[in-house]
Structures are given as structure tokens and as C-alpha cells.
Amino acid sequence: MVKVNKKYKDRLFRMVFHEKEALLALYNAVSGSSFTDPDEVEIVTLDDVIYMGTKNDAAFLIDDILNLYEHQSTQNPNMPLRGVFYMADEYRRYIDKYRLNVYGNSLIRLPLPQYYVFYNGLKEEPDRTELKISDAYSKKYPDLVPCLEFKATMLNINIGHNQELMEHCQKLKEYAQFVDEVRKRLDEGARLEDAADGAVNCCIEKGILAEFLIAHRAEVNEVVLTEYDEQFHIACEKEESRQEGLEEGMKALVETCAELGISKAGIIQKLQEKFALSHESAEKYAEEWMPVKKAGLTQSGESQTLTEYDSQFHISCEKEDSRQEVIKQVREQGIKALIEAYAELDIPRARIAEKVAEKFSLSKDAAEKYMETWFQEGRH
Image (tube, rainbow, N blue to C red; front, side):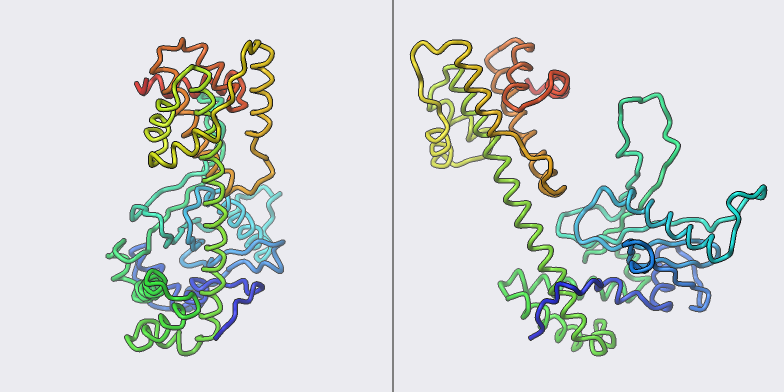
């Protein structure tokens, strides 16, 4: 059985579409064109050895159009930004190749850029999505128009999506079928090595990417094992982060409800409502995090307790992006639950904002923004 080689950098999508004929068929399907001569395709895919660590899946010129194709097995809203980097390197190489003078008086003519992301992740996405780099820009100055816009068109290539596109590119359709065969076996409980090997055998028998799989069987197995191993690792990290963020949000809710004098039964009920917990789980969390009441607690004593909690609640800004994204989502769920809990008790809005800032280590402005959002939506 083929073992996972952690140094293997290539991707299955890149392997399947690395030749001119395959790229031309994919281009015709995406653009609605009907080119027939593969020699019209000039492959310009970046080499990470030459271009300072930058590597894309497929890039090629045809009919004065510079096409950049990327494959993604996870939804990534930062693809437009990555595309800017890729395209800048492509244009740099184009200028170097044709010895164009960017400092001259004449306008340089450049090939028209087109950027497509082929998505086949597990998260449900529409057939076609437009991602824009402007979505990432600061919203602090709404009256200013950004000087740079860059768009990525994300196409869902999972089975059942973009069927017209699949019918116009047989190799893309068969690629999707092969990935689906691997996933079916994994869903049935097969080991990753067995799922990959079984999918290869099945597809060869059915004539799905058969010629390619026969010629590159060992490499295909290795790529599949490497890609799924990386995806599994990322999924585990995100689940750990999700649980971490949920527990922090639930702890904040328990402590806040206790400060408001809500009974243990009431706290358990709120945990069930806000975090979809069973009664047993909610009871366990309530017992774990309900503070021990002390007679004569002073204002300074309360501040000290909140400070101690805030130091525990602080999320390290050095964690990787995937963890930060998940933690942010569940943290916001906790903030929302806290605002609603206070609002239901008719606590003044200013006091709610103060408590949200304390519990979640937020600035006054950040707390007010959360308040603005949820009160405008009528969630109180």
C-alpha cells in the first residue's frame, strides 16, 4: 500500500489538467468558446522554485487572454487576494519574456486576465460565486472608491453542480466522479488507503479517467492520501477551536446569569436555548462554571473576578487563521447570547454594552457595534 509522502507538493487537479489538450477542453467549457488546436495554448503555470515560493495550479495564455485556474477543497474567501499575487507574478514574467519597457512613453498591451476557482469541498456552495478583493477592504471610509478591484469566479465542481459545464468537459466530469468515489468509500467507513485504492480500481473498470489512472496510479494514490490527510488535520484543528470558543462563550453566559441572580435552573435553560445543549450537558456546564457566592462582595472584588476571567478568556492572536475564524464565529455566538440574556431582563442598553465589553475583552466601540447590529435586527 502506498504511504503518505509529506513532501509531495502536487495536486490531483493539477495533474489531470497539466496538458494542453485538457486545459483547452476546460477553457472551452468555462468560456463557451470552441478552440480546437491545443498548440494555441501557452502554459505559463508558475514554478515555485523560480518564483519565490509562489505556485498556482494552472495558468495559460490563449487568444490574448491570461487564464488563472485554481483548485480548492475548502471554501476560502481570500482567493481574490491570492489571485492578485499570482497574477502580478504572471504579468512580471510576461513583461520579462517580451522585454517590455514599463518606464517608457508607450502604453504596454497586456493579455486580459481571467481567474477561476474550481471548488469541490464538502461545505455546500452554489454553482457559481463571485469573490471580490474589495470585500476584504476596510469599511472605515465608505465614500472612498478602492483603486484596486480583483475578482475570482468560484465554480462548484462537486457531483450535482454545474451539470452543463460538466457535459462540455468530460475530463472535469470524470475528475468529479473520481473524487466522489473516494468520498463514498470514506463515508462507508473505509480506511483512507483502501478508499483511494478502491476508487482507482472502480474508476478504471468504469472508464472514468481510466487512461490517466492507469498511467499514474502510484502518483494518484499518493496525492489523494496527502490531500485527505491534510484536510483531516485541518478539520480536527477547526473542531478543537470550535469547542474552545463554545466553552468560552458558555462560561461567559453562566457567569453573567449568576451575577444577575438567575437560578441554576434558569441558567441551565438558557444554555439549552442559546447553545442547543441537552439538559445533562447544560447542567454539567452550569455546575462547573457557576461562581461560589461570597458574602459582602465589593465592587473591587467584582472587578477582580472579571479581570481574572478576562485573562483566561483572551484568545491568542498568534493562532493560525483557520482557528481564529472558527473561534470568532463561536465567540460571536456567545456575545449574541449574552446580549439577548440581558435584553430579556430589560437591562439598560448602556449597561449591556459595558458588560459585553468586560466579558469579552472588547473595546467600548466594538461592544457598541455588536449592540447596534443585534438591536437593529430586532433580536431583543
